[in-house]
Length: 304
Ligand SMILES: [Zn+2]
Ligand SMILES: [Zn+2]
Image (cartoon, rainbow, N blue to C red):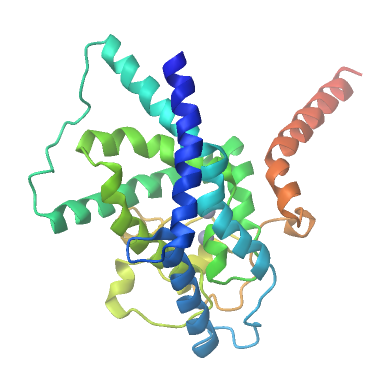
């Protein structure tokens, strides 16, 4: 028990120190400044090459989404996720140890050239995330959390990181075992993470930058906007791609019926969705209670 407690405390202090160093020392290996740089880059492109010309460069919810970027990228990890996941990993390894499993690695990629390792990590991770994203739409419970991302009504690069912290927990947990089996360490994530962040910013931006045939491989604003469409003919949506659109084309979930430049975004009753950060954090939990109360009510009425 003491071991877990020690991990909890040192996770907090290590991460606080790490975050502080990130801010103090800009450099090429620095997440904080990469996020700032990428954001400025895509914001500038939105100003220079806007897809919806009438949309203001400082669009609706620009600052809220800006806050989400830093919250989800840094603060959430600082507040808890880093600690929870470190304990989770340790406990998981201990559990495996009980069954005599000392090493999860099933494929040895460490001997491959670096570029092949990074490419494999990028593709495998993106495919896992595509599946997780589909799950977020199909499970009623998870959809309550994912709705926050779909509450964007005016699209821009910063909408990329507008999501509930619960999503981070779901993605990281489901990613962990397959990625550990391939034998990727956390240090491999940096380049892949930065590249994926750039594509994520890109496919949410108000930008017209045609990719040509590459659009069948990489996600892009013209495709991803349909993922956010308010009115969807398919019950669970389409275009689940995170970085790659390839999976949607391969598995028949691609949907691009027309130019989606001016389509309405969100979901049914999106206007009633809470507008402030704190309310949005509580909403998935409250919505569950509301749904339960409604069910109870219906049952009572039935009995009467
Ligand atoms: Zn979605
Ligand atoms: Zn999105």
